[in-house]
Length: 540
Image 1 (cartoon, rainbow, N blue to C red):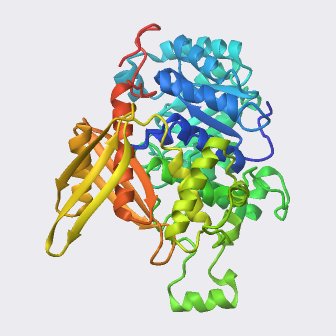
Image 2: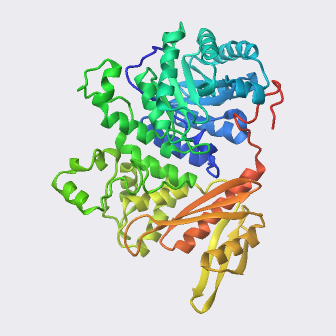
Image 3: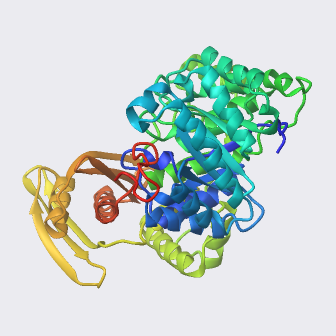
């Protein structure tokens, strides 16, 4: 591959690093739905997961490779530690994809070598060419990452990178693993690599960074100016700790400030050619899907995709925007797919009309899923006069949470008032269809529902977050509820939407319980914290 593809490649790691956000674990159907939307968004690479982590992760990566990578579309990538077993599992999982990549890594900073790997620099210099060569023997596209590159000795880093490229790495990733760097430092690091690694022209420089100091996007843009041509990011910036560099912020910065960045690509400043291949009009929908399925609510003042990103409350601002949007808006909301479209669908609308609108929104449902979506649509149309695109998105995004469910909600009934003790009656069904009912009192209707559900599920947990917001405006708006449960230090999220927020809360709680049960049953490796001690026995 050429060092400079002439534009910026967008490497999306929402399904790998993003899923490592506390409580953001996804089931197979949810991962597939996000991967399909990422393909529509136009990202260049989808890092689909860490196949060696668990059987579930392996299956998800393989399914994405089969269904999203089987046609001309994004490269499907899997992560692997610098170990034969990891790399072999990764190669098997991504095998169905037409375009596939193995992403292998090892730490290079002295603090990681001493305290995590307990290896010397010479050990790492021996491991890197062996593992990269092995990965290259299985696929043509190999990415190598120097974990904690931001805190690594530069001369040692140059040596490791040169060795990886000589062994067959086609992309070299420079991670700011702990979000420590400042923009000038990170830009200088990329510049130094370009100037001091003799064979750097044989690989693309990529960057990966966390947002611990709020500098990830700024660091990446400085890296682009110094020769980085692949950016590893996540939708809504989700990820470990404070998250990753935000995909939507990076893409729109390069879009809006194209005249500024064009010269760094040897283009005239006025060149209209986009700097990324991302379809910006898909950004808002992608953001909502990821938020709904992960339960990671987007803060209102989040750039590009926050609820307030295009809101103007100040009278001076409102006056200016009405006269000319350019006075206070640097991005047209339609550019990122934000609109207030309402559809002429109601309780008399047919299945074909609903299917056509869903297809316009980018949802390609099979017959069974369409039947379920249509049933929910009809139920909603009986309770709500105007159905919006957001309502349909809420229906479809919730639908993919249902597979692999141990518990299914059958009934919710609540009595409450200023002179009544809140009482909830709920019925749960197990996987065999057996139903049980429980009644419980609570401090409020939602608390009563949760108490009743816990008495039936018998899965110890602590409710640590309950959030509700309206999908659209109006007294009959659907309410979106996100619930987060904690058990043994781990968080599990559930999300649901309904015109009745108590029903939505009950379904969100059940979704979180199902994730908790699934998480208890699976033992998941963490790619960075679980270090390989031997080839056959990783640390658990």
